[in-house]
Image (cartoon, rainbow, N blue to C red):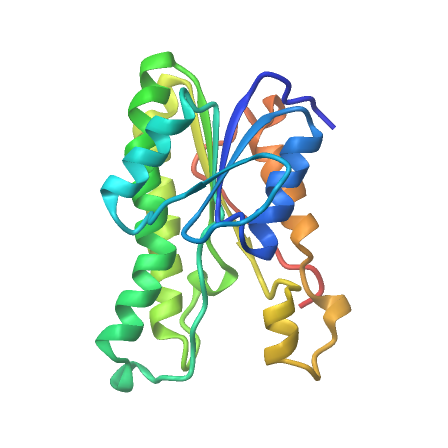
Length: 222
């Protein structure tokens, strides 16, 4: 594993199962980690409470961390059950806010500093579902599709400034929530949070210096 000693790493969504594992892996690789979430949580690294749906919340979080070398936008959520014709404004806004707006706001807050320093890595979390519509998942699919397009666009804008932007497309992630929602599934076929952490650390490493605007499938056997 590459050492991230001296790197200032910000991971969002660290109160959740995936965000916590990603932050832990960076922490174990000697990075200076700050975990950001909308709820307070204990961790062996610095944590901040911030509402990243609010642009000012993202700006304040970035300002509190100092110059950011690596930003991992893990914060997000999932909801399904409504057809497109039945999708409520609340469901639509919830998915867009949790998945797209949090990533957008953190990118908007962090990118100017990265560009000014001529270096930086951003890893966003999309989803396999972003590639094709799925029944009863319209708002979720749309929000993750936005993350993919933002990733590609931002990567094209900043790659000549030393900043790499990429995203990961997991299938079903093995979390306590997903196990509770799908108790009859074969959990061994799902993607583990550690799988996502592996790819996140790779994209943040020097080995991925030539990768820009990529959407990396992480599907396990599902």
